[in-house]
Image 1 (cartoon, rainbow, N blue to C red):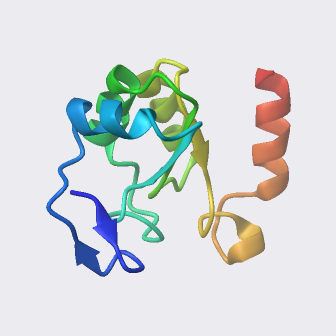
Image 2 (image 1 turned 60 degrees about the vertical axis):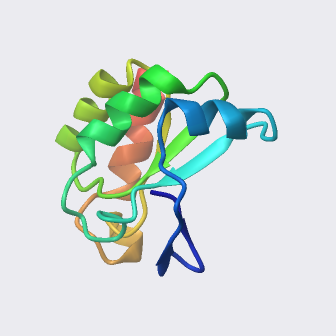
Length: 111
């Protein structure tokens, strides 16, 4: 479900293909936070990533749970290259264990 009020309150809007299609009429792109895993470095929410890859037709960035290069590889596989990902608290510059410099290097190689 879509969370509001700083992710503290769940709305009655279910995130599904129908709601995505509705919101796409009013958006140029999405930033979708997987609030159950956001900031926890517990791994990406795989089912959400897979579903978003099937549903969205506009640029979409997923946020939540990424903690390792293995997670980034899994994300790339599940998203079929259709989504972008943000990495936050897992980065060493924010106190995490994932090297910012290594992430940049890996992404540069991938491009």
